Image 1 (tube, helix red, strand yellow):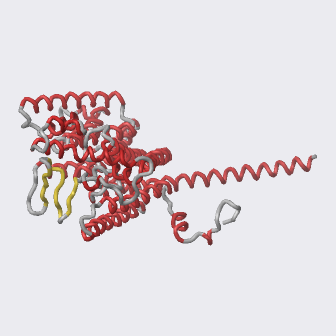
Image 2 (cartoon, rainbow, N blue to C red):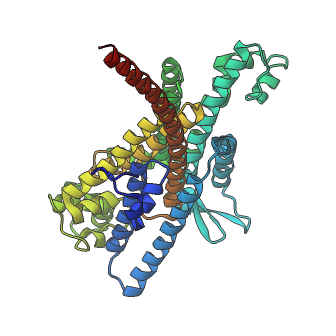
Image 3 (cartoon, rainbow, N blue to C red):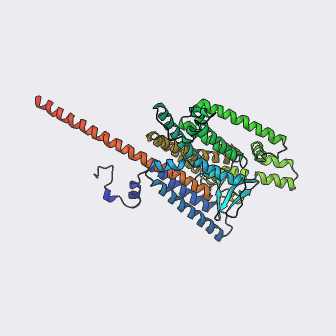
Amino acid sequence: MENNGYTQPEASRKGLWKLIDRMEGDKVIWIIVLLLMLISVLAIFSSTPLLSDDTRIEIMKNHGLVAIFGLGVIIGLYNIKKIGLFRFFSQFGFILSVMLLSILLCEVDNGFIKAQTLNGATRTFGLFGLQIHVYEIVKVAMVMYLAWAHHAYKQDMTAMETGQESTTFGLANWLSTKKNLEFLRKPFWKRVFYIYGPSLIVCGMIAPGSNSSAIFIAMILIGTMLIGGVPFKELLMAGAALVVMALCLFGIHKASGGDFMPRLKTFTSRMEARYDTQRLERYKLESRDFYKARDSIKQPYGAKLAIHEGKLLGKGSGNSTQKYSVTHIYSDYMFSFLVEEYGLLGGILIVILYISLIARSSMIARLCGNEFARITIGGLAFLITGQAFMHMLVNVDIMPMTGQTLPLISDGASAFLVSCVAFGVILSISRMAKKKTQKLEESTDLHQDDIQTRMQILEQIDDANL
């Protein structure tokens, strides 16, 4: 390699620079991943209250192991070179989601798997001593399932137009041969069967455990459908149907005195809640009602106070005071903690990292000729960025509490590892897209060299004639 003042010789590139140079995936996304992981390790260590050295070391040890394992997951997925492997497993995303959600709804407890209830909601289950957060898995599984469904739908339509037998939507095509089910051969009903129906079923199964998670996942799935090119009018109709259904459920909830879907009471109370100290004035000082009201606002109010005290440059690493009063500051309120310690500039850096992710992913998606790859990378990037901004909006008190963590930064093994899976898939697809682009550039360069050679010959002929 020539040293022309802008590039280093191959031999002089050593250590980290050589490793970065050898990365085949999108380098910007790699940098985003590594920065988020580094911020996570530092933030978890700093946000842990100094109860004892043993406690802090144990927490850091556990999170460090999760981070190392997560990086291994990213590298493993990044090294997958066949898009067909992702496509094959993605078709089971809906089945996996239904199975996991059924464990929660049925409150399974067979000694091997045990559904776990917290604050009146069943959202996790224990397996081999590990706590599995089902909603985190369902998010990624359903985005990848919808990518497969859209890709399969396009292939099915192409087969029908050319008069060939479709092999992608075998179940719907087989059912359409039965009496009174002929309508399943129509494109609209195939979209209902494979796209709208599964999304509605999954969101309906999530709603009893968490209304806010059901709404958030519904928004992510709708965004993925838009990326896939689903008719906008149909999405409006589906949205209207969801609103009517939600109103009916809320009406039944009120009529039953709160016995039907009790989580709706929590959802409405969070929508109406005001997290400021003025609400304490209505209670007698140091009464039971006073302490109850104080505890209900302690975390969201402490998060707002952390952002206020952070100012422009922050208090510095390890100097947070709100970590002693906000119980889950290292998970649900991680953004507030980061702003308190690193100020507004630190918060802006976090925002830039997530915006850069969606921007780079959009660029990579345009290079993907494969429909599945394009929807997968767009949907996963939309999921990660959407969750990050929802977390930030909750932290600054623009939205009610939802329990969404800051992807690849907040504490929580399940959420962290699922985010690693999403980033691993994005990096793998970026690697495939980059190789395709390089091949196109090489063919273009060869063509340009051929033109330049011919132009030089013509110039020599002109010079000779002169």
